Image 1: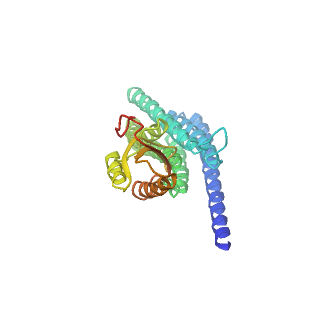
Image 2 (image 1 turned 120 degrees about the vertical axis):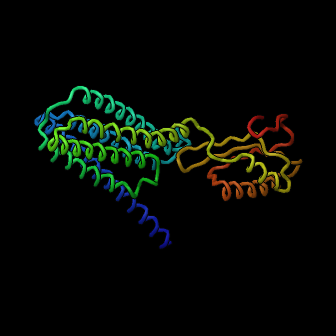
Length: 303
């Protein structure tokens, strides 16, 4: 009992630390966004203002991610029988989509700056962009250890890495503008970082979209069929469906054809099948329908 209470206490402590970490990151990003807008107006730097709006957008995304993470702890009920785990996936998808759109906007603005260079106060630009980089880097570092926990945390982490990259690009551009009057360096770095972030974020967007569409996870159905039909008493497995509620919870259902037998016999078979599906294919929720020559089509997918 003491061990259970100790684990429960540690679990609650971890959640509390994550909440504080997330709130800390949100406050930091909101602060630097306001500072960048004020500094951008004073210095005449559109780069700082653009970076500020990017930070504002990411701050909003962090708030959504935080709310989504809190919702993920809610238990299932009559209205949401699967629970609220998919809320995190929705947030990851939304954040990734917004980030890609933001990067496309930055690309557009960067191309405009190639054509029409702008004169700015490079000293203010250097100081504020460096400050923004440090704050974004600290924020990303705060979420680094959490990014493997879920798509949602990973999406937020990538947002912060993107912010740090953009701030660094603005800082580097300001240095070159001050030293060599090379105004094209700033938009060039912005283009490179935008393309990099789009590539990275697309992977999360694609994975979260597939989960929302209940696409089949990476399971070899032929291997499943071979393993299950090797069990003594199983004639055939067919009409397989599998999907993911979130990144970790894999659901599986199938029809199992057997000879006429007692219900107690199917219970033993069910236990054996579930053990195989859990241990060899990492499936967390399994629903099996036992039948006697009910489906005429014995294909893996159709019935």
